[in-house]
Amino acid sequence: MTEVKASMAGSVWKITVAEGDSVEADQDIVILESMKMEIPIAAETNGSVKEIKVAEGDFVNEGDVIAIIE
Image (cartoon, rainbow, N blue to C red; front, side, top):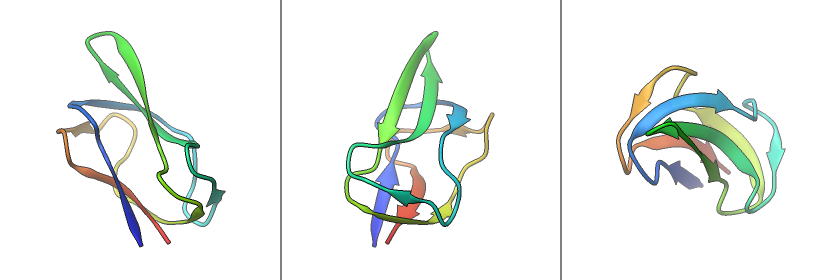
């Protein structure tokens, strides 16, 4: 099981996958918005999205868990 974590603080602008989706390494999972910039957060490994821990519009801090991939 791999935790996908926020690389910086920002608002969740868009979630690009759903629970149960298959993902590949380096595939974008979530797009954060910070200082008017869009920052994609990608999966670090291949697998299936077990859980998405955020919703669009949520604020996350650096290191917060965004999703779990197994």
